Image (cartoon, rainbow, N blue to C red; front, side):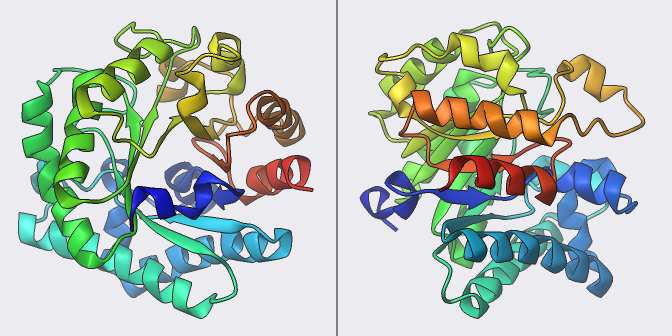
Length: 308
């Protein structure tokens, strides 16, 4: 699918919520190393995922929007095979199964405009940038999973919880080499800056400069709106590149969330109102979903507040 033909560029598309936190905390199902792709190792796990996605498909149908089906492959890159107990070939197979599920659901919900997105997470942790690769190293690493997802038939790729610029550039270039559209979603701390300390605007400008403005759009995820709404500069060119938000339910910092043993679901109504304020300021934001701590309740509240 060409970048210019992505339907979420000019109309509202919902996406899902905090898949891993929903499955782990709300449904009580263990996810080794927080990897939802492990659910594809059993029929029961696939049933859980299918039911999860159906909730968002039904919501999109009810609200008359499209839906981006994001694959359960956030923590399914090559480095995770051995820690999860898989060979690389086995992990590749699970990546393919994740896309097969989404394509099947799209065929079933033919009346709902659906974009199948292959989700790529950071090589390391989504909160801590750890050892930062060069852009070339990042491209070489992420090209493997990107290629598997492309072969499985995705419409686009989405790099979720990017913590640093070189890795975001690497994923972008991997997508570019495959001719696939890509959305780059940065995570920010409570001060609105990347975990590396860079400003969000500086990070977006740097990725655009390094890749010829290749990302179809940027997103912010895994942070509460109170963490980043003040740094969004009305009228700035970089802000106009932000096309989606997948916020956390909680106002807590990443460090605080990392040690919690219970889920903080925040205030869905307040979260929805903050999204309404964001899209009033930035009408180019068309992709709305959730991240850690959110579930169908939060995305429903956001849809009801923002989509009239």
